[in-house]
Image (cartoon, rainbow, N blue to C red; front, side):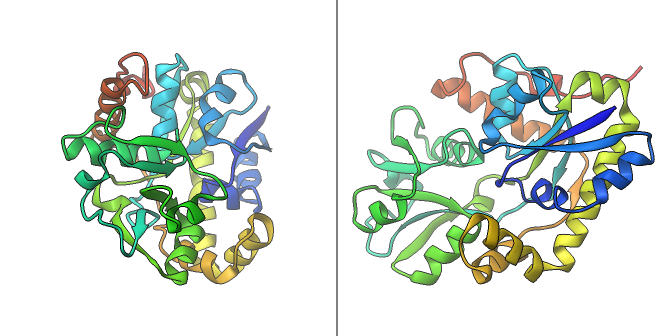
Length: 287
């Protein structure tokens, strides 16, 4: 059997895993081979799992919640350590916006459907505001930074090397960082059949993730050069971003499930998902 791992640019562990031999080596030990399927939008991960296009994937916090709401039967397998500095909400240096509450009535650019939705929705909810009615959420694009600097939008949610580059250029400031609101973890999940019928395969995959993380942590300049060459940006900005990441895979805990449930509840209240989700359903049942 070939285990197909989904890869997209927004999940750094899987991105580097696809460029190393660790998955092949770990899966060979349990009698399996590996293939990688590259796609552009992590929001599609749940759908790709259900369709059998991939067997294992990883995203930020929002896509597994929206996947559950869409009826996809997924199982959480592991999470990264918290990534408090991986992303932030930026405003211009001279913006009158000083607090989350000041975003009311404004336009915020973000990667809708990604962990950034969780970040903004939770921050607004904590401030007594609603993602659905108190801001205009628009999908970020290649012009988002210019629109922010020109005053055409109120705030911009950004991460990784783009965040490092924007701060390096100056003229903007951090309204709040991801870690001020959410733990901002990478989340790894699979289909229920694989999680429950082949736990040794999942264990092999998690060992491979840990090895990929260890490689990236030990080789930040090489990892930065790979990403810059493939995804754009400068190696210096990539290195800043990669050094900010905690390269460590952790177990799925009750605390993590509670945070996901809180996100799901906010999403229902704001209409971002159409039906309630019980996050605890997305764990493997043991005989």
